[in-house]
Length: 534
Image (cartoon, rainbow, N blue to C red; front, side, top):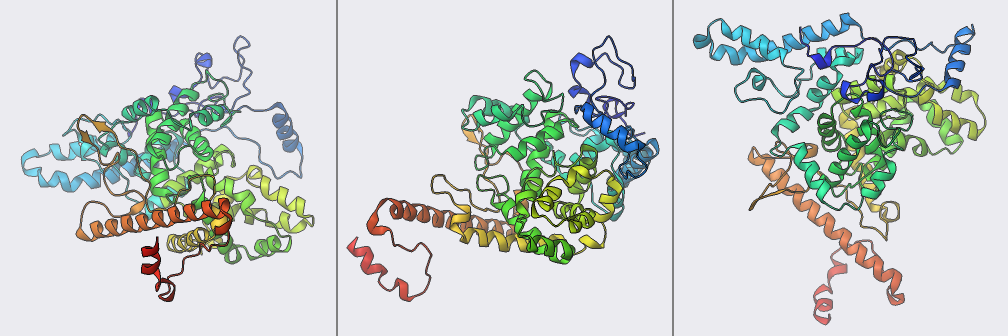
């Protein structure tokens, strides 16, 4: 069977769903499947993920369970289904045995019967995410990224077994591939970030205990997750100077740490930032997530026309609510059990799942929203909608139904480009006079690490981030060259705008200058004469 000591599911109980190294040491000797107190140390007011269970919530759940009219489901123990795990392990073994079959057959004449055994050995190493794999070992023969097939999509939609979630996410997203192919390790990045004076360090320190305050792993300065989260956020801020630190990345990273080891969580974050979301998603302007809010409103009339009409009737700006949902990938918004199922699909199918999930949440509350007449009540209902979802199956059924059929990757990509351009043209909406803005580039600039007299040109090797070009065919190289030239022009345009706004604000005689570019021939007829006069 495909298993390691770290991945064997444990019994239900407080902290049982946490990755072993994150379980609080003060409760390490307590039996997680025991419902009795141990010397008064813990009265089991924590759930499987380490979140504090408030007494009021327990009383409300009890009252709801006793009510015949209540549609709220009683909380069920978070126990992994052995049959589902077996189905997944068999699927993964067959997938990797099939992959290694061609490789093994090429050397079958020399290996004889040992080829088949090596294939199974390779498949069994699936759960190993160690970066220190010796060359020529069976694990090096495995693909570092799971091929996304219809069968895999179907299984992911049914849910990834919790004990397999970390390894599956790493291979679904390509984070393991990014980690293995990087010539610099996470430890080196951490070392560089710890030696550098980051402008964002104070903001990171302030938010460490605010990120998941109700979780035992992040509730105190000495909690197990706090130093890990600090190192990851500082490493990301150092690696991506255009982003620095964004609160949205904090809650996503903290949630990943509940399920993954620190280094795995870091590479998963880099994959989310580079490959799943637009490059300007977490920059200071939040341009990417702003564009996504416009994309959502564009899709809503087709997916949920009644809700769209209701929002327009009451003049409710949906982005005031949903921008936070997108920025955190629903972490801290959806109940954690439901969040993990949504993330299963997110890492398999991409960022369109953010739009599908939002539409599904709205559709599940459509009847309630239509029954409300007061604008404030509608706004409050929308704000609390994710927290009131009790049945993950209902949400996923809506998410994967015909309701969300108009939401596909090509449509979302086209709309993102259109609305990003519109936001760029709206100077007052995206550019702050008192700060240097980040532009919607195709890829993020990453910091370099110097080794002796050599400079590593990129921290992460392989294809260019965000799907742009990369080493390979001449077509790819030409595409990357064109992208870089476009970025230079966009950067130049912004620099000119900043200079123009400076003089417009501080020099009265320039107060009437027009910053809108005019590319007509007539407007440039006197350019040479003006240049000579200057």
